[in-house]
Image (cartoon, rainbow, N blue to C red; front, side, top):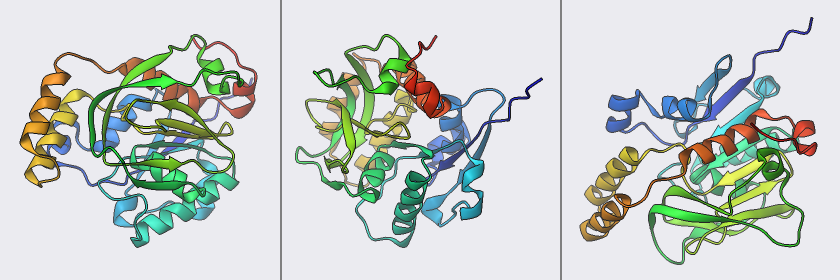
Length: 261
C-alpha cells in the first residue's frame, strides 16, 4: 500500500501584516492558506521582508513556494530583495514550483532576467478583466489541466509597478487593457499573476484607505474605485482553482493535460 507523503509549501511573505488583516484574519499567512491550501498539507511562513528565509538545504523539502505582494519595489536594492532574487534563481534552477502574486510576479520576472518598472498608466486599483492569451500558439499546459478555461476573468488589482519585459523563455498568458503582462509562466514550474487572487474586497477597501492616508493615491480616485467595486465581483473561485492546479499538479501530470474537476 502506497502512503501519500504530506505536501509541504512555503509562503515567502514580502509585506508586514496590516492592523486590519491581523484583526480580521490573524495575518496574511492565513489569507493565503485559506485561498490556496487544502486539508492534509503543511504550510510554513517565512517573513522575507524581515530577513527570514528558508535554509538552502531545506528547499528540496517543499513542493512549492508562493511569493506575496509587497509595498516595496521589485526593482529595489534592499538586501532582502536581492537575497530573494537569489533564492528565486535557485528555485528556478531546481525546477521548483513558484507562484508569484503582484510584487511576487514582478520580482520573479526581475530575478530571471526580465524588466520591471513603474507602470506607464499609473496606479491600477480595483477589479480588472484579465484576458487569457488565445492565438495560434499551443495553449499553456496549465490551461489544459484546468479543462475548460474562460476567455477572461475578473481579478482584484492594486499596483503601480508592472512587468515591462518577461524573461527569456517566459510566455505571456494573460493581459488587460491597463497592463500588458497580467500573467506569465516559465515552463511548468513558474507562474506570475499581477493581480491578487487571494484578496477579498474588504482587504482592498482597507488597503485603499491606507494608500490615501499615506498620500499614495488621492481621495477622489479612491472613492471612484470604491464605487466601481459595488458593481463587480472578482472571479475568486476561478483564480483559486488556477493557483491550486498550478501548485498541486506535478510537472508530469500537467504535461498529460488531464481534466481538472
